[in-house]
Length: 221
Image 1 (cartoon, rainbow, N blue to C red):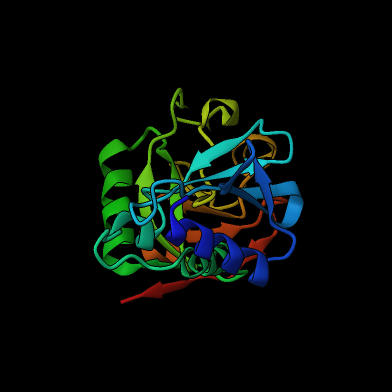
Image 2: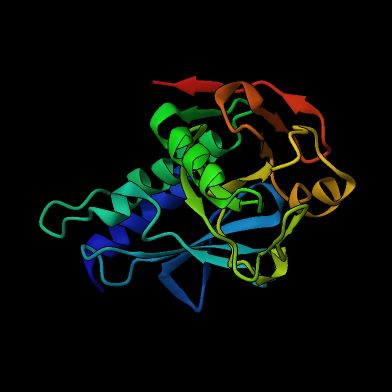
């Protein structure tokens, strides 16, 4: 057996005694998280980069984290971090996702405002990737339907991605408050939901939680 793998395994169970192996390999480990989710880590090729998934208790929802977690994206075989370091970074990453505060960068927001103006009188509707409490990317949901008075998307068509914690859409009517369709469909599974009303400037924006309650947000330079 690769001594590096054995050493990494014993470090894992020392720091995370609730870790369990699967497939009868010590290089295959699952670590329980909150809300019945697990980190599923395969490091049988260590010091090459491990394969890491976020899975549900029953394995029904999964998301590969190799393109999301910085340490995995920038993995160096010659000077690899320990698996413990990787686990710690992943846990910090998910703690940051749970932030109750939301910010959006000014340049990014101005780009969305320009898109709203370009599409007027039709609505725009998109998902927001939120990392460390900052909205950083606009993503068009698959199968989204937009018209002059509504926008709808289908959460069941989305792949599992814990960074997609927000939505943003426009109201060409000029009313910045959510409709029942917004609350029951668009807001339903997301923590931060922006509405940009006509005339699409920084004073016509509001943000709401998934129940339609208005929450504060910051615009970052």
